[in-house]
Amino acid sequence: MNILRLFAEYFSLILSIALILVVLSGRKEARATFSWVLIIIFFPYLGALLYLIFGNPRLKKLVDVKLKSRRNVSVKKYFDKMPDYKNSRLANLVETVTNLKPQLCYDLELLPSATDKYSKLAKDLLNARDYILVEYYVFRQDETGDFFLKLLEYKAEQGVKVFFLYDGMGAVGITLKNYLKNFKKNGGKCAAFLSPLSYRSILRMNFRNHRKIVVVDGKVCYTGGINIGNEYIGDIIGSTKWVDTHVRFCGDAVYAVEEVFSEDWYFATGEDITDLLHKKHARIGGDVNLHVIPSGPDQSSPLIYDTIFSTLSAAEKAIDIVTPYLVPDQPIIQTLKNASKRGVKVRILLPGKNNHIFVAAAGRSYYEELVEAGVEIYETKNVMLHAKIIMIDGFWTTLGSANMDARSFRLNFELNVVVYSKKFASNTIDLIESYFEMANQIELRELRNKKFSNRIFEGVCRTLSPVL
Image (cartoon, rainbow, N blue to C red; front, side, top):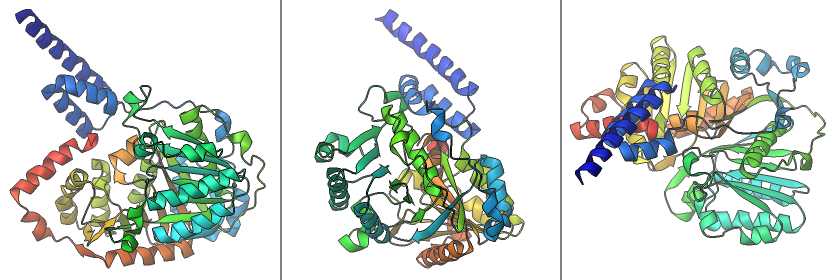
């Protein structure tokens, strides 16, 4: 027995040292490295398991290079007709940072609520003639989910090619309940992205597909922050209201989103569907430029993070951030503080009632230093704010699926669009201001008088935030 105990102690020590060396040799930020070292020291066996599942910072994704062939087609010949883009230094900055060309679109709409999205989406799905691409992080098995699933089943039965990709963790109930039985029977194709029920995915559980995408016939695209579920129409069904946004657009930019879906489908299934899609789209132009920016752990550099960080640093007048979760790294925090100190008006809006209490607590640990630097922080009342919008200098606008946290920046597969349009910016400003009307500003004295127990809890959550 003593020999076994001695062996266990030595093995634990060797395992801890080996894992700590692996962590230190990685390229994680200091806070994440420190968190993992603490976990491994105090819980060597559990820490080893957690690191294997959650600590791997990269995911190599094998994607046929032809899927990327059209994304960077230049639309420079249109720029002279697009003063909103041509005169935007931030647009040029994004192109430089991401190495992605902007795309043209038309009929661009800001959808300020789930009811707006769902009603338009239902009509577009009913009008589908060729194919439908659907990709969601959450697809509830409730009245809303049932409604849209019936639509997809109906279109598949009509002969429309329907591809449905859902995240294996966010929508795990789909697999457990065999929810798509009739959908598949009618000819629809479906796949789980990194299902936790698959032994092949167990060490990749931390990488989630957080994107929300619908493409209809290669002509219409929906993307943003709204999943499929009753909670997004809470004001109608009597539960807590979730506030979120989405965009709908047509034109060349749809093809860039279509390619993101194609890559994700290939990764999840090994099936290349590009030949089934409209490969020979005529370039039809548009009246608005936007960047389609995918990001994920398969990239050598996190494109959405790089985009946000670089544009925040370049802000001259104002920064408005609307996000459900605020767990940024120190460079983002310092950039916001510096912007405020040099005269940029910085406002951050978060939900007062959050669905993730540990992440919310980690975020609140940053409030005091930000407010001391002049940053204005607001929290909404009686709603779960789930929108993800950043507006800089009253014009540059990005929205999509990415939150302001390490998970979205480093671990999740996300999709944002950056829009260069004065009209769209004006509509977004009106929407953001309506959010602020539902919120209370957080005062510095309130933060300084915070209970000691709350400070401890927030500090612990902040320390562990890289692994939440």
